[in-house]
Image (cartoon, rainbow, N blue to C red; front, side, top):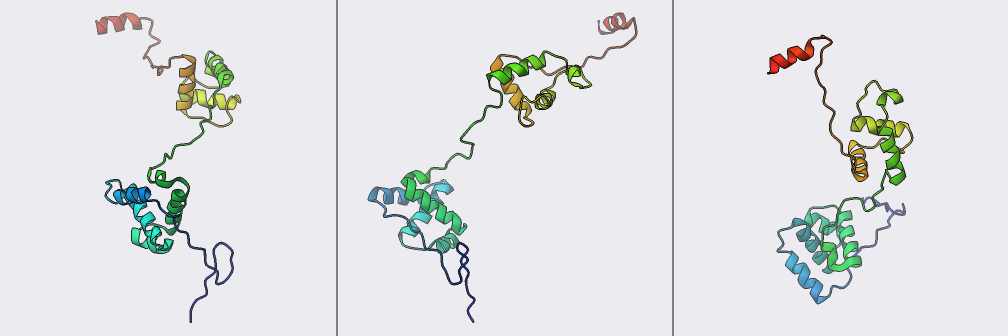
Length: 187
């Protein structure tokens, strides 16, 4: 007995997803796709294989098996080609398209004035600012909506023209003759 298939999209028994194919390919596009079959870049090679198979009216699940990827990947490649043509053969960036500036001019100035105060004024048990401590206090004081990274603080300070150096810890002694002894020991 044959098992009944349930459509993942509509939930109807016996329904099949409509096959998706590439739009008619121009001669120039076909030449670019065939040239892509000789590409050293596997991204381009696989996309060309998918698109040429689709132009032969092969279905997405069959192409996926032949190429060694998921059938949804095949559908995504076909849609990209149908929208952008051979531009779909160029790998896109995975970086964020919008950059949110956490510290605008007003908040940057507030950060600068915050750093001119002692961390002890904010209930911290040190008198030396670190980038992490500045990020924590800026969040606690409401300058940022969430805890930001040390790099975000460093970049905000850089835009203000404020240099940042790591704090150095110096060894000292309560001995009154410490300076004299240290000078004679080090030359």
